[in-house]
Length: 243
Image 1 (tube, helix red, strand yellow):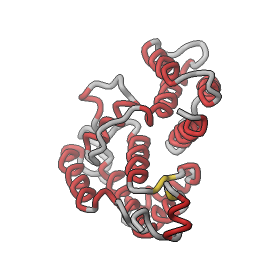
Image 2: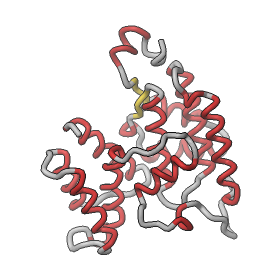
Image 3: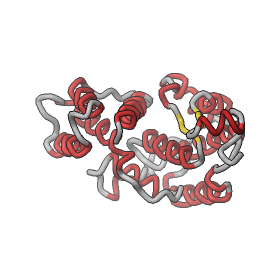
């Protein structure tokens, strides 16, 4: 990875945790700083994350070990490719990279007596994910859309996936990685640094109640073209990669 890619990966990982009210500790932040400066390679981060999980922490990380390991693994996600099928298998592949120690039985959200009625029934996750994947495929994974249409459709899918809520832990983080991948392949990047936790949480809550206006506004503030020269000089800001 070039220095800019390292910095981008660390910034994304930090923001992704903060949006879920998680904060890496000073030790993990120093490891990330060393990575950005080229003093640590990706293999070293993977090794540190593995040690944090298998040894139950260290004198440096202590009780914050699970969050620190998650932070380091999120930095490395972009270096761990997976099949980009836009389905539950892709979501599980991303989730497995964040929490590799979970058994198959622990990955998906399971039905509980006190299940949140605002979420999709856990017993039907496979069917719900398949329906979302089919809808995405019908829309060609949002490729070649003008910016306003892309924002609208991505907000729709963020809402649908949030309602599906396939994972008991790291669900939001997994979905944001997936949406970032989906957006990039469609010609747009998402700057999650522009989403503060309070605004993000409010948009999610309102979307689950049927109003995605705040979600659209949130995404509109984050979307930027992958190839700005082509967008700005040839197509114009509101036109998509196909123009």
